[in-house]
Amino acid sequence: MRLPATLLCATLLLAGCAQPSSTNGDAADPGDPATPSPVEALHATIVIDRGELQEEEPVQAVVTFDPDSRPSMHLYNDTGTPRPDAYTVHDLLLDWSTESGVPVTVEYHAALGYSVTSIDGVTAHSTQGGRWHWGLFIDDERNTQGIGSIPVEDDAEYEWRFMHTSS
Image 1 (tube, helix red, strand yellow):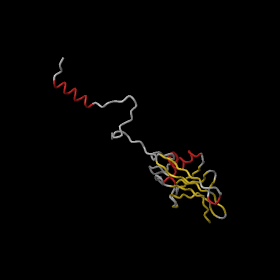
Image 2 (tube, helix red, strand yellow):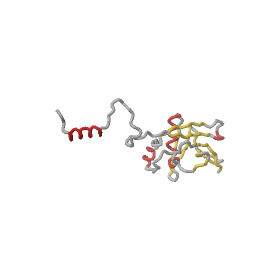
Image 3 (cartoon, one colour):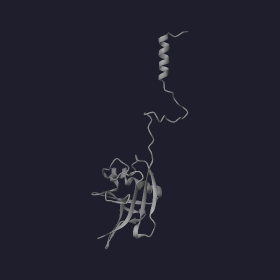
Image 4 (tube, helix red, strand yellow):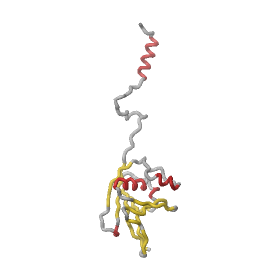
């Protein structure tokens, strides 16, 4: 049986529009704009320096992170505290704590937001001679913002130093 020419052309035209399907697990076409691109993992360095309080060498670790994750978000939701829609220093510290098993304690302050109060049992405290606290340095520059307001930059260094401030 012969198909009329118009039906044959329509059949061939439609056959050319069909997309090949894959059932063998082939990867998506990276050149296809509809294919989502994988999130590239980023890296930041964390340094924990107990300072003059303890005579240990600073601990240093590279943390690989997903910039789209928000491990500290539940704390902000619980307190109704706003935070940037970014992977923050707070998130980095929580990821490092989880990976290393080193406990970290943070505390919320209305004026500052969250700040670090204890790392591995070394706790901020006041004495007659002043105050001991965990100071944050980003690429060797002192930071005075809360840890939830600072987006993490790829390949940056975030150092917590246990410091003494005289009264």
